[in-house]
Length: 113
Length: 112
Image 1 (cartoon, rainbow over the protein chains, first blue to last red):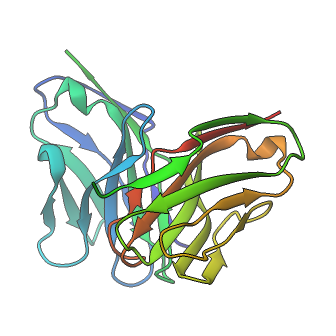
Image 2 (image 1 turned 120 degrees about the vertical axis):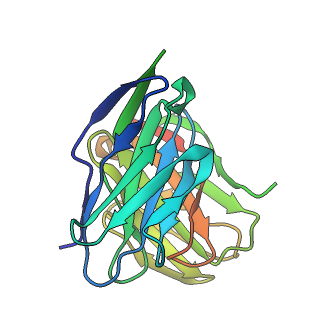
Image 3 (image 1 turned 180 degrees about the vertical axis):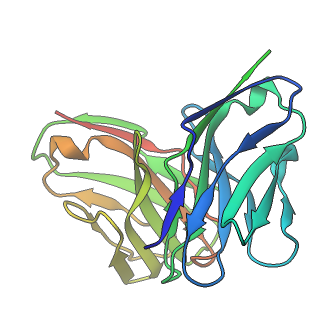
C-alpha cells in the first residue's frame, strides 16, 4: 500500500538551532516526493521536491531535504531555524497511478525565541 | 499574479442545503484537484480533473460532485451536506499530476 508517515506530530526547536522534520514513505517504483508548508489560515505552499538526481534537494526559505532510498526517507532540514518557520509541514508522495499526491498527517514545527 | 482562488473562504450552513465552493486558477493548468483537511488525517483527495470534461474520484468522493466545463474553473458541489463534511477544503492546480501543485487559500465549511 502507498503511504507517507510523519512520525512526529510536533517538533520543538530553539531559534538558531538546526531542525529536522521526518518523513518516510512506501510506494512502488521511483518516488516523486514533495514538502509543503502551511502557515496559519493560509493554503499550502510548495517548499521542494525530489524526482531524480542529487539526493540532497534545496528548496525555498533555506530548507533542504535528503532523499534516502535504502531507508525510504525524505527528511526536511534547515541549518538554523527561525521563529517564522513555525508552521505545519506536510510530506507528500505521488501515488502509483500518477494522478494524486498522498499526504502525510503533518508535523507542527514550533520554533521558540 | 499566478494564483488559485476559492470562494467562499468561510461558510456555515445546515444539513441538506446544497452548496457550491468555487475554484479558479489563472495559470492555464490542466490538472486540478480538491482535498479536504481534517485534524490528524492530513489532506485527502476528493476529486481530480486531468482536463476539461475529464474528472475522476479521489480517495473520499462520497457526498461530493465536481464539474470541469472550463479549464480555469473546478467547482466542488455538495448536493446535500451533512455534518461529517465539516472540514477545511483546498483546491489545487498544476500543469500535470506530478508537477508542483499550487493551492488555494482554503474554504472552512461548517455543516450544522
